[in-house]
Length: 125
Image 1 (cartoon, rainbow, N blue to C red):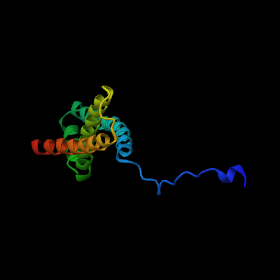
Image 2: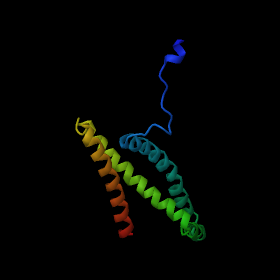
Image 3: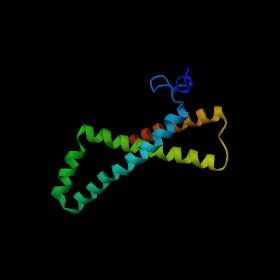
């Protein structure tokens, strides 16, 4: 038996199940990138506004399309999710919340808070 054959193999992604905290961590990074990209939409809105009423009306008609509205609400959820995860990091910075049961509890609380804040925003708007 050679050394190459006696080495353990890594589990494949379809076999290995990431813990909730790992999924949250990856999602936090992805939402950060998407929020940065979403700022281009905000810049486009301001640009349309600066070009006059006709340009802004065209931007408004585009914004009323259902897919754009879905992206808009996804942007709002990503913003609140990123905020809640940032608050979780502040808790970690003081050295709290590293117990295994607390990690999953805070992850679920973070997801619920982001959803609740998005829902509250939808109700308010």
